[in-house]
Length: 71
Image (tube, rainbow, N blue to C red; front, top):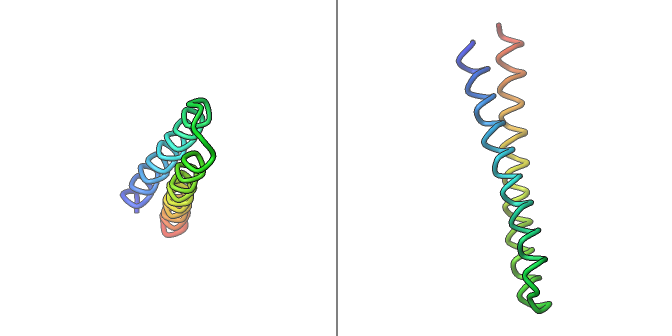
């Protein structure tokens, strides 16, 4: 089950990279000086990306735990 552990670790890293990307995007958008409506629209998209990143990381962690359990 080593392949499940390493695949899960790669999925976790991909999720964390997506999370960092979402954080940097929000910071850039907040400093851009946008009006409220445009900022709100961009933040709503960033929230969706944030949830997807957290889901991806959680699934990867589940894969790692399952791989360690089955080992």
